[in-house]
Length: 205
Image (tube, rainbow, N blue to C red; front, side):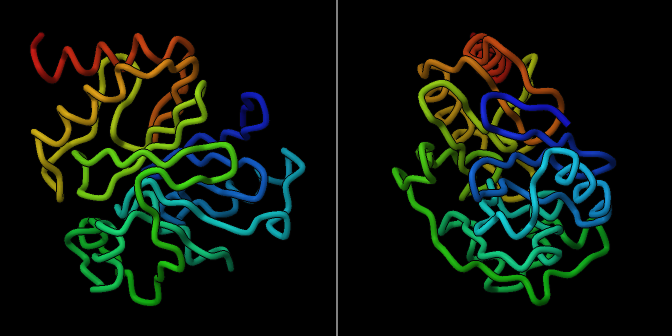
């Protein structure tokens, strides 16, 4: 468990995504397989579930949304990715890969480009999925599976698109990112440099 400014970072274990908590918001929830570890990490950080009001999912893949059902919280997701939840599409959500179902999952709030989550702005960054988003506050980028540290970026074979990913990384590399908080792997300082490396790796420039 780590912390940047007021953002609590719970590093994913196993197949779980990383989880980020700020104010009354939890960003992503992992698969739900390691929920006790997540709750123990929250307790260590002095956070109660009762302090939270909203889950924001960076995209609709099961390793980021599976834990939603473990919390009695409203769920927010981009319109394009919410469709697969509403249609109970196990393939589009990668739930079938995990041998799981998304029965009973819900989306309470539809997110669009430019929406605000407290001080963070929603950036629609398709590529890994059609409705992938990042959250950006002028200094910190919570990037989901759009971009990772050290030249990484999300796979594009489960609802993704190469050209969309190129455009999203092109957009992100022009931001001033001090801290990059990705969906998997370590958070890093000098986020802009890491994003530019990822863009260069993808495009060959």
